[in-house]
Image (cartoon, rainbow, N blue to C red; front, top):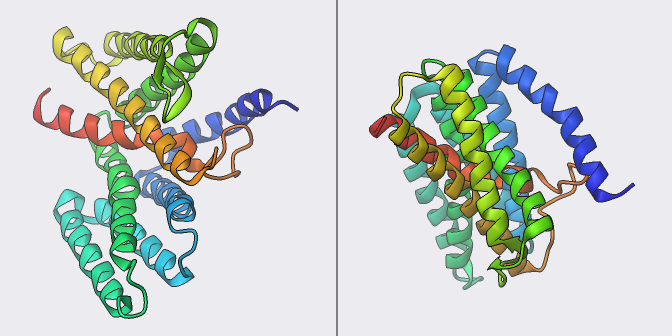
Length: 267
């Protein structure tokens, strides 16, 4: 079976299940989904950038990541910043204790804390969005915009791509594909506005959708850069045809806080 067919079969199985859990599950169920996704993605990230480190370093990072997601659920942004600060302090203390025998620990600290911001902190904003008025609809908007853009960029780039977007990071991505993805972002955004959010002005709405699309493509490139730096194609194998969970949510990681802050402070 080709990887392309596996990709679609996985999406057809996992997609409806995810939609059902988001639509019918309560906030606690949604927070558990976010926590599980963040934990698996963070473990894949540590496997990429801290593959030679001990299980203690990785387990500490995973525990801190879960604490970050839990802080979004229990007290919103107020507690989260405190947990993030404590996570840095805790990681720093562990690295200080190891510095005498391993001089590379500053790099370990950097990669560990970066992972906490990159995955559980960014992804945790989904819990805040879910708590908005029409929160479930906003979640579906975000996911549909990002996944539609990602899929369209792939097919448009494959059919019409001529100019490389970032050949040193991801040779397969093209400018034409990126523009096609932004077009799909706008198409989905227009449908959601007409059906669910008629109260917002067109100018702000289009700007919001375009920023989400650009951030999504940036997140995709950042994860590609991480994989290329260690010579791997996928972050994992948990999703046939897609790779790892991190491969599937890379665009969502950047677009999620983008949506949260733009909607909170501009719309």
